[in-house]
Length: 88
Image 1 (cartoon, rainbow, N blue to C red):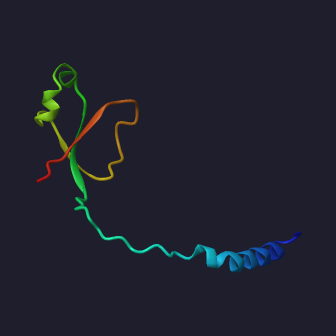
Image 2 (tube, rainbow, N blue to C red; image 1 turned 30 degrees about the vertical axis):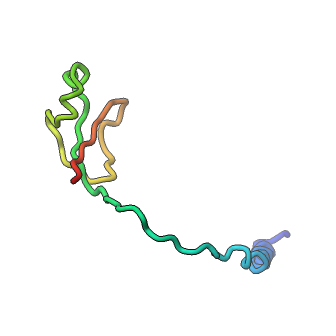
Image 3 (cartoon, rainbow, N blue to C red; image 1 turned 90 degrees about the vertical axis):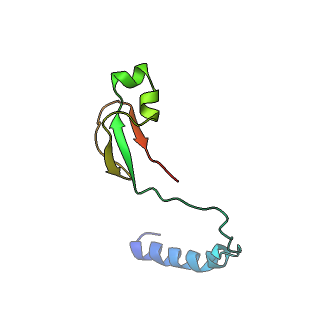
């Protein structure tokens, strides 16, 4: 193959040849689990008090900020952050 057109022609030929092998014959599966979609959560950066007593984080103490998930943003350097979400 020396040109783009020859390459495209060969790819088209191979796609046609292998198309029968790409069919999906698997039966559809039944949904058996309940899903909870997380769209937002509470978030904050670890403090010195958290290092001394982790129960502060578990109990929800401190200044939490509500963020939309997925959450991209600070901190931009190495840090420990926490997310919190109560689910019924």
